[in-house]
Amino acid sequence: MAKGIKPPKPKKCRVCSEKFSPRNSLQTVCSPKCAIHLTNQLSDRKQKRQEKAERAAWNKRKADVKPLSHWMNMTQRAFNDYIRARDGEICISCGRTMAIAYHAGHYRTTAAASQLRFNEDNVHSQCSACNTHHSGNIGPYRINLIEKIGLHRVVALESNNNPHRYTREELDAIRARYRALLRELIKQREAV
Ligand SMILES: [Zn+2]
Ligand SMILES: [Zn+2]
Image (cartoon, rainbow, N blue to C red):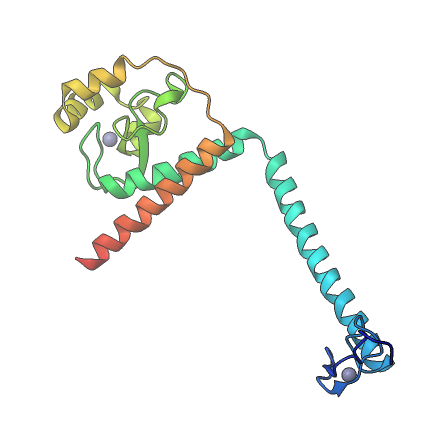
């Protein structure tokens, strides 16, 4: 044996775990049979990884082609669910507590003041009649809102006229925040 070249040490086969004497340092399996097995294993794994990556890319593409309005609606729904849970069944305008349905009613509408569409001062439980048939029944809404949050905060809403354009990332964050707040609220009430 030439000086400096050591005989390779026995190794454990990557597939069957048998000890074997490798012919060179690159050999990791004991036999052609185990070599085939290893190749199949690796390509299986590679294929699974690839499929997973393709699925993720597809889901992302699907989410990305949804218009911003879709995420706006989803986010408004999550926010409104929280508001209705926060306030319970009482109408901010007419005070009814036995209405058939309650909505989250915006004091300043999303059309007039989109910058307030996710503002907790601007949105309160409202019976469906006031919300849909009486254009928000806004006169009594204002009176009861002042009672509820104070004139100062109502005036702050009324004088906020800085339009805001929401980004997808912002909407994602708002949606996550209000889903978490709603879960927290439900948990707190169940604990009582
Ligand atoms: Zn083997
Ligand atoms: Zn009402």
